[in-house]
Image (cartoon, rainbow over all chains, first blue to last red; front, side, top):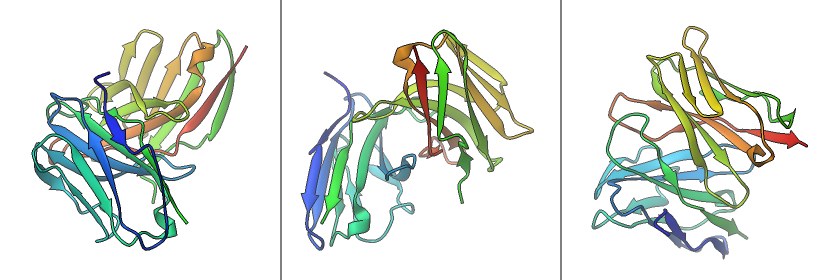
Length: 115
Length: 114
């Protein structure tokens, strides 16, 4: 299967712990996006990369959130000092090129539960 | 404030009939609009898109209409099939700095009745 993959699929953590999620995009895609989806809402854009460069990070929800894509391939999203309000589905998407309207392919998401 | 609005949380349609899903937006800077379909426990799947310079785009059973003056778009599915039962998200993209992240509505749950 050559789609977008995310790991883990589910994560349960205690409040105050740090968590890291991984996303592997489709191999020839140079753009990688992170979104968060809470219950009853659509996905909310957080940040994106073109190759290894993070081109937009002002939408990250707080300074506890950070993302990397060190070699322009896989990406990680880290949340430090998790809070109960961080419980959500975290989605990764990738796309080829930088044209408008280019389809973003989504992974299955990582569901985070903070207890 | 929601920049992309889907005001119908759910819609029930009989199999074989037309499904019409609506979406309104407030930001006139949006340049592209996309529709995604989502099944439970899966990520959203792209359906169809439309540029702001067009008013219609068609792909098989799916047609998207854009009324830029009303800041309104709609997705028509005809004929509706049982496999179309899913949550449909309208999304918009601003092209000011290149292809940025998408702004999504809250979704409409489409239920196709046999």
